[in-house]
Image 1 (cartoon, rainbow, N blue to C red):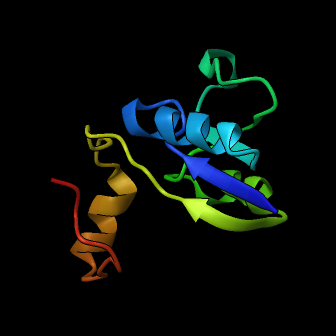
Image 2: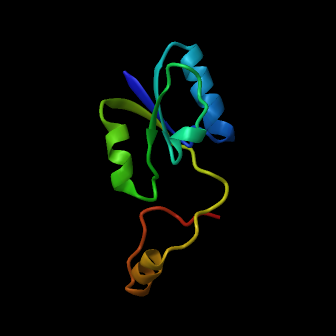
Length: 97
């Protein structure tokens, strides 16, 4: 069983990955930049960004569990998200603080 960790290179995610590896779990990490990941040996690193959902789809293949962690710094607002708000569309998730 593979466990996917998002935010795997962050403060919390890095510790989650390390503990899962120590427990003998099969770990896959989603990161925006594979070259900067520097995760423990045996971790499968996949490049993707949750702000671009299509880029994360390959990382989900075969995953049975998921640990979601986000950065403390919210991403910049895109013109796309502004235009959706202008049309009255709502998000299923609350905005980041």
